[in-house]
Length: 466
Image (cartoon, rainbow, N blue to C red):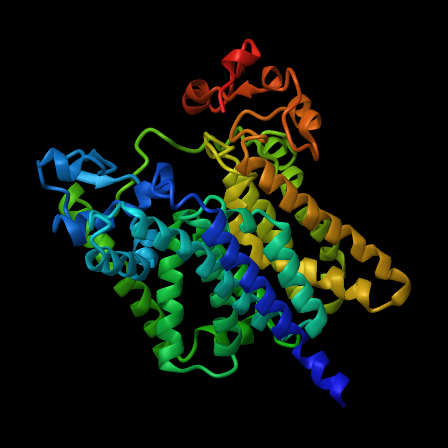
């Protein structure tokens, strides 16, 4: 009896340990003390908050160079200012920003300027918070289809064996842990909503859908697999769609939630650009006829399967999905190629600096399905249990390579096969390592979608760039 009680508590114990590890790592390992959180893309997402709440300048009209020095803005066609990214991440960061602002105002040691240590720690902590909550919702979703053990192992492998782990505490403040949380919570909510529709749940689904798109517009593609995922195999499509969209009142509440969430962005764009919809990326775009799919999946610069090999392992679970839940199979097999094609059609298919294919962190809740099905197949037979050594090794590899990246052993955008094999599982870069790396050809990639030159990162070791 006591063993049975303990068995039921295993998911809780495992999740508590994972939470402790992630929080401890976030506080002790993320560079918030050096004030290195609010920079690069994070600073662009964040710029809405200090402008609106500290400078009282939500439309970026101030001319004071002292207050506006850190604005990350560009001029719009009508001569006003806008931000390169939409405000979804800023909305999700708002509670943490306010906590940091409150602390800075009560402690004279720190400036209440939006950029001192309390703000840096608050935004850093937001990443681990959304990671933990995303893992919790993902577990609640998975355990309705898979066994409790398979579900908790999947959560542990996703949390420690993918670059979600890296973005939860090494390089924090980016949009990816937020997208992971929003998609996980959406899957859980829709799963329950189809069984019992309420006005509140409908509204929350609309809000979460709106946030998913506002955080990263490409994530509007998530709607397709979600519609397919939840189709009951016993129902024909007509009956299922009727159940999904009727009664119409609940669908209207979903739409209302999304519109209300988008309203601040629409107002901002209308005032600043003259249109309620605005393409913020200027001359940056997609090259649909020249996607870099193989590079995005297998290159040593940022390849998904190179730096998150657990996802290659997860692919083998797609076949079993067909046996246990056909709609899961069809949702993943239809959605994954589309999302990968769109993702790696972007001019900068490697997405600048970062560890691995960071944009694919967003779809980890979908990838948890084939991973869970494969793990359940393994643990269902004792003779197959040795296969669990594979994901455990891949977790180790991910943790080690995350550490290497944090120590500049793995370079942020210039890795090559020769460089990767030189530092594979090494604590230090050997001689001549830096000469084996190549700087991406950003200029030609942006203009033509193709890199035309190969530039060494360094000519000699004394000139290495870390």
